Image (cartoon, rainbow, N blue to C red; front, side):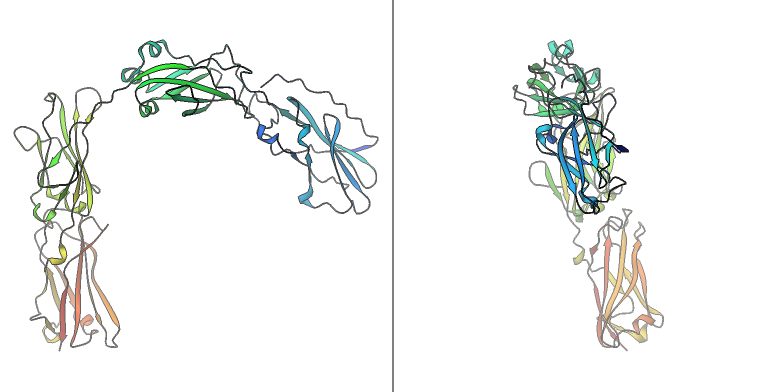
Length: 486
C-alpha cells in the first residue's frame, strides 16, 4: 500500500496512425470498486508473465505481408509478436514478461500494430496499478481498542445481553490509513500466535469490527489474546498486530437434570427403550427434584417426536407434587422405530427458559407380524369356496393396539396369487387408506370377479400393512392364506 505517481508517456508518436484501436485487456486485474485503484493487479499475478488480450484490427491481412504487434509498458516496448498467416481467435493475446511488473504505482499499457501494408495503428491506453506494499509498513499495527467496560470488567453474559450479543472493537488510526477494499483478519486465542482466525471482514471507514457472542462462547472462558492483520485489496498482508488481552467470563447455566420415562427400560446414561405393546394408556414422564425453588416458574414437559402426531407438550402435571406429566397414547405410535427427545423447560417471569438435558427414548416397533387379526367370514379351515361368495369375499381386520387412540394411521390391503395362466397376479383392495380412530374393524371386499381370475385349488395370500405415521413407513401384519376351491 503506497501513494502512487503516474508515469509520463514517453512513447513516440507513429508516422502514420490511421486507426485508434481498443485498449488492451488484462483479465487478471481486479474489478473496480468506489475509491479503489484502477485495474489493480493482485500480488498473485505478479510472479508470472501477465496475459494481455487485444482485438483483431480491421486491416489485418497477414497473408499479404507480415504484421507485428508491439506491447508498450510505460512507453517502451516490453514484448512483440508477429504473424504471417491469418490470426486465429485463440492467438489474440501477448504475454508481458513479469520483470516489467514493477515498481508500485500506476502504469500505462498499450499496443502498437504495424499491418501488412506498413501502416501503424496505436491502441487506447490502459492504466494498470501495482501495489506490493503491505498496510502498516514496516511495523506492527497497533492493538484493537475495546470498550473500557470490557477492558476492566471482561466479557460477561450481562455485557453481551446489553450489547446485541457482540463486542465491538476499533482499529486505531494512529498506525493505519483506511483504503477501500482493505480487510481485517482477527485472531482469538490464548497467545499472540495469529493462528486461530475467527473473523475475516472488509473494513469500513469507521474501522469498527465485531466479535459475536456465539464465537466468544464457543472459544470458552479465560484469558484471551486478540490480534489481527490487515490485508489490502491486492492481497498484501501486514505484520501481526500488537495484542489486546481480555478476560472472558461467560458461565452458561448447567442443564437441569434429565427427565425419565417411568415405563421405559434404562439403557446408556440419558437413554431408555419403550415397548409400545403395553403403553396404550400412555406413559409418564417424571421430572427429578430440583436443587432450587421453581415454584415461581412455569414447568413445561416437551415430548419431541415424529411430526405433529408424534409430539406433545404440556404444563399440566399429573401428580400432586407437580413433577409427573402424562404423555397420551396418541403421541406414541408415530414414533415406533424412532427416537423421541424428552426434556423440560423452566420459564421464569423474565428471561429465557432454562432447558434441561435431553433424555433420548427409543420406541420399539410393535410386533405386528405375530398378530392374527385378518379374517374372512366365508372361509373355513383355510379354504374359500367360490360357491360361498356370490358377490365377493368379506375381509375384516380387528382393531389393533392404538387404532382407537391415535390419528395418522393408514392401511394397505392386497391379494397375491396365480392367474389362470400360472402368472403372478395382485389385487389392491385398500391403498394408503386413512384409518378412522375408533374401535371398529377395518373391512374390505375381495370381488368375485377378481377371485375368478385366480386358479382353483391354489393358495392365495391376503396381505396387510399398517402405517402409524401417516404413510411415512409401514409395518407388515400377519397375512391370511386361503385355498380357493369351487
